[in-house]
Image 1 (tube, rainbow, N blue to C red):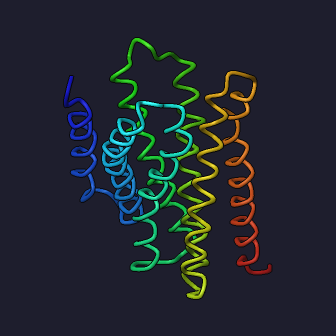
Image 2 (cartoon, one colour):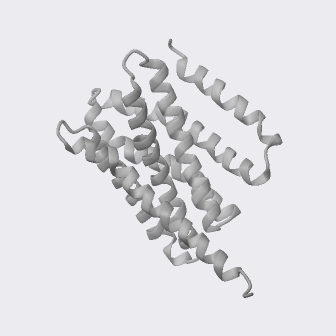
Image 3 (cartoon, rainbow, N blue to C red):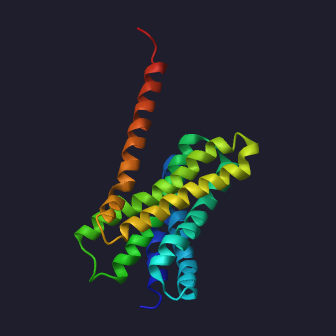
Length: 219
């Protein structure tokens, strides 16, 4: 169907949008960034489609050199705006930026599922969920994490922002190259996001626990 991507966007976006007034303030912020990620995926699909046509439908080249750049820049824009206009709080930025990446991946995965239903499988879903979707969240969260420091040091604005984008783009590009490999390297690509995510989450949980212990009064 010609307009499937727009039909899918409306079906996903509108119900979530209408739920915003009923959600708690903190959860509402996460939902807003999730919606921004979904919208970013729709927007970038037009740009990536154009680039694919201009480059002669060379999919491996586009997905390893073009889409990491376009996607990470578009996903980072709302994070940068939030950091400089609303808040540079580390926890808020990491959670919000991760939500942008997950929203982006949610729409991307759903669109692929709907348009290629005969080609997908349980294995495909596991890889897309634990690998590709997580990669998008990690890349955007990296920008959010770094912006909490860049915002406090104005001299780092240009070089710091550029460096954060480069980290996200390079990570994204390496992931795409690995998962498209015809050798065992693709399995390395599949586990790359998890090997990044698990240690970071473990460290964050320990950090929160240690802070709680410090706050507790001595008996």
